[in-house]
View 1 (cartoon, rainbow, N blue to C red):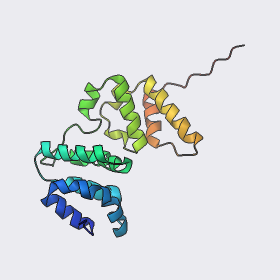
View 2 (cartoon, one colour):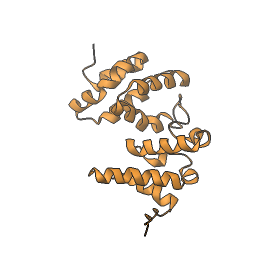
View 3 (cartoon, helix red, strand yellow):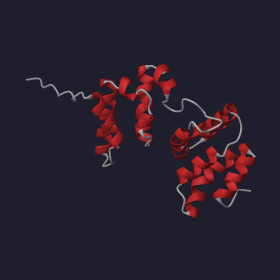
View 4 (spheres, rainbow, N blue to C red):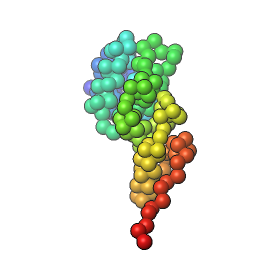
Length: 177
């Protein structure tokens, strides 16, 4: 039976961590009924996971892999908290942390940064952004921003922050006379 409150879900996850796969998808709906932010409720569930680092990483990975876009976004938003220095079971090098900054090839790293912007994850969480940003990333971000504007959607401020890092003007279209 599903818990009726966020507190019930937190208690169940703390005592039986495998139940997170059942509680995580319902957390936003439960939280909404209680007037709580869904991402915050999902983060609390992840932070309630007991166990050693490997076990917590396994559970967080499963929740992410099986999640819908909102659930995946909540996991990504929770990564800094899951890797906080005061945690016993820190998950280490979350999302685009130091490992990703040194190990991902340029194309994979650029795609990951673009995904961070798209998901609304603060780019301040991206390790090495100031060193690895380049003209190609700026082009990708400009294209993303143009698509958002064309669709009448807001361009995230972090997209503009990346463009400011690179400081490369958009190429002028060439005309054949």
